[in-house]
Length: 438
Image (cartoon, rainbow, N blue to C red; front, side, top):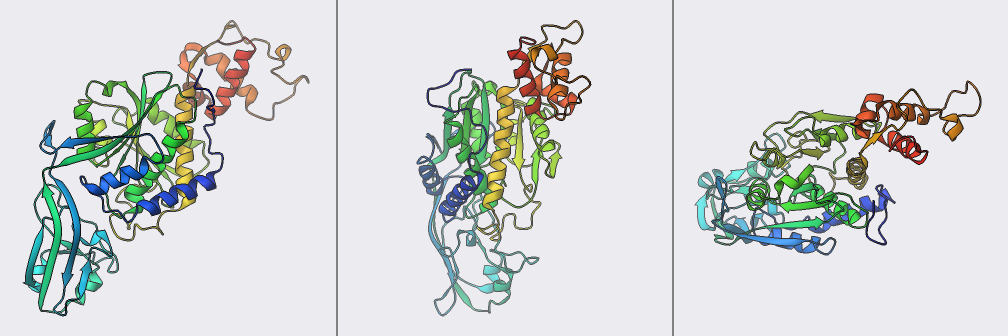
């Protein structure tokens, strides 16, 4: 395979600690921005990502029909607060953008606590945390606060202000395309619509951005398409606008919740048994770390759009702890202390290992299929009679020779032999050099 001059074939992280620290620094930089499914927070986030990777930013007008959906009005917010009778801001958007229900309509009013309560959201089971709430597709408003703070509010009149706008504008998303030797594509997708939430949102953005940056300097067979999109409506919009090219996607991953201390988790694609599903399971199985494989379901992240029956793309979801399965999910506790640089690096390394197999998987054919060829005279076997190999190399070569009948890929051979793909790949390389397989 040929590639652009100056590119390497390094599919492993040269320094995982540096990569982890870099991803964590990006999360820290993006953390204060108030993002939503539309608006200037998304634009600012994409603007900062374009410093790292080549990206085309798309603007889709409000009212655009995308299958059964319509691109919504654009939401932006400047300030929001609740003041008590002394004029003190007891709830302040400036302290945390989670304090305002995302997509809240503009409000300026004074009201008694009894009326205000119906617009306040808390987590009684975690009295110190602030929940994350949205009102995307119904015009409403509200504030989020800790349950302990709510319990301490006294009766009286409160001043309420949400200085926001909800008007015709655009849905914004970013697309980074890295052409390869082949037009067939691998899709990497992450959602970019959450405000200050580190694991659910920013970890996926950081891992995807660093992955794109790394792949840009590697010889690639596949072309890679990275999507930084608002959840649900963003994937639907991209698919609606790109129906004619979606068939080029041969494999895909949605990346989310990739920075917490939990073990790797993979949710299979709707095709269940697609090559991407098999490769991920193979990598995780041979990683010597705990992992979890989940069946496909039509709930979750944007894999459910890519896997909708009209497209049925082979797209799974890579996470650490799955969404909704960690207490900090969609709360203020999903902060900078919840994600770990070393876990971000581990997630990135696993995804690189997955992509490396997809890039190298191939079908070989044994050129000496009539019985086992003699490996010793070709320098492929120990020279001492009766010697038992102390590694998997000879076993891997025998498996390749036996199953390289033109029907089995190297991944299939690795699965059947229960050996790491790298071992089978190296065996195939040795056998090819010796002229035993083609």
